[in-house]
Length: 286
Image (cartoon, rainbow, N blue to C red):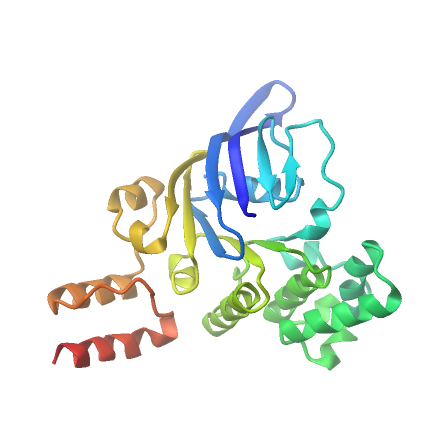
């Protein structure tokens, strides 16, 4: 069971006098246990859409079918287990980490969802291990951590509740190139090995191309495209309309494939593997 949006609309109310339409009759379907990316320019509605997935925002019209639950339009009640089964990671981890230590933050979710003390500790340790958090970090306060460590801790605090779906808003913001690549690999592992649906909002195509199964492109509250990244890379009309560009390194990769007459690959290498992929393409052509 995946995710389906049916005629979902949402407006931000400004001073009760003016409405700003953020989602405009959205329709799409996503498969389960996939790595999904939502891209678009600032103000396109992608973060607003993300917050509808766990009921943080409620649609004015339409409905959302998620796993075996239905999220109706406001003001109907949310499904009881929604926020346990769908974990939301905010763009700024300091908004999510609020306990005295990272360890207490990891315990909070499981305990809040009525796990026993032993179950909560096991879940917390599993989440810390999954995100590569050393034991020494768990006794620290969030503000003693680096940006990358803090972001991993925020994700681990959500994973500890064992959600079926994890949604992340700009998870690599403020991270260096190496940390971005490492984090994407960890998230991809959660999808592939732990059978979780991972949904990432980003504006950076190069970070997600090697991992994503399905991409959604948004523009002014509407869906311009929903499908495989391979197909999107050939839809320059969609990319132009959304204000997006194919990363320069991948433009070179595509041009090389075309000039050498090589068969097109549907799986894209990550940034660190791009040079090796180009070298392999040259060897294949010789």
